[in-house]
Amino acid sequence: MTTPVSVKLLDPRAKLPAYGSADAAGADLYALADGPVEIAPGESALIRTGIALAVPRGYVGLVYARSGMACKHGLAPANKVGVIDADYRGEVMVCLHNHGTQPQTVEDGDRIAQLVVAPYLTAQFQSVDELDGTERGCGGFGSTGRR
Image 1 (cartoon, one colour):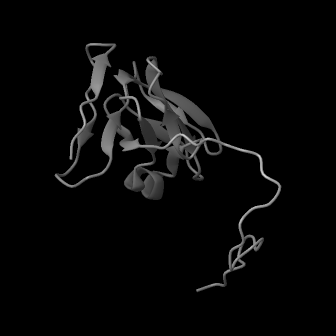
Image 2 (cartoon, rainbow, N blue to C red):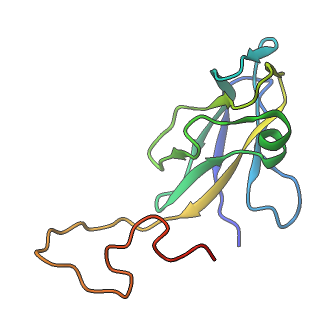
């Protein structure tokens, strides 16, 4: 199933998001930089993509780490998962954090994150005096066992 998403290129060097394979869930987002961006260990840098999106109403754009970049270079979105709401029309930016021990460099055109466009439900929150019971109940972190 495909859903059209309008993309505005804000810079002639910007690239459209692109899927790496026919069954990929995430489309690669590309860095738009005037020169190399070095990110020191433990630091973050805001990386431009040069694109703006019109995510359809009822959908959300979710920005996730690229597994290769995270595992091999320690670079992943600082907020873990970025959210692009359907009413946002500004430039898509990715704040990359260096979780590693060595400085890492992002170059213009590097694949820096992946974008998943997904439907969502809007909750109607309501205050109640009691919640329905479950087998787990109030059990928190680790309450269901290790395996």
